[in-house]
Length: 190
Picture 1: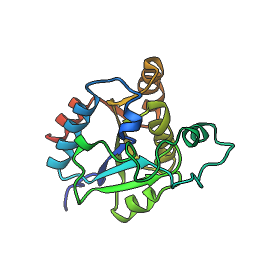
Picture 2: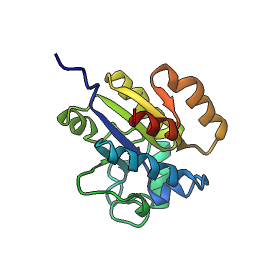
Picture 3: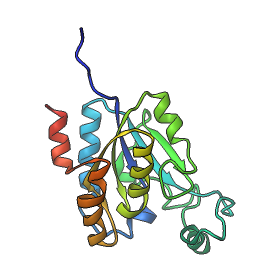
Picture 4: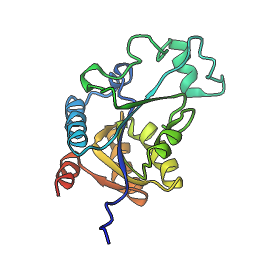
């Protein structure tokens, strides 16, 4: 009889785009993300990138959507435009999957669930910005979809540090393990 190798896990890195990151002044965030990314690659974990973009003219954005109507008004996050791609220092590899979403959460308006199910992924390790945006929305839906979840607390950032703290210390632990990147990297080598 063979030991259970555990659930197939993917690292899910979300909304790490220059035009979004400019709103989060955490100078060390990208360095910590690169540390998690390198550890995932060493461990042979699949890496899935999620980005938010819209078609030219924003046909996906309803005038009822307060958040994205503002983006349409300012002309941000149009596919192919500067600032909409993933941050260039993050070294996206050909074997990585890049998912484009059209809403806050990683599953909404994307084919993320199809990609994960096709790869047999049962567990997700999440990082990205903002903690109160894509991370929160993705944790909630992924938990309802029965994924085993880990949130890398210092791999997330929010414009409001208190909101980040409450989410990572009080809300997320109800549905996910919450770890630092250093602790998660160490757990991969056990």
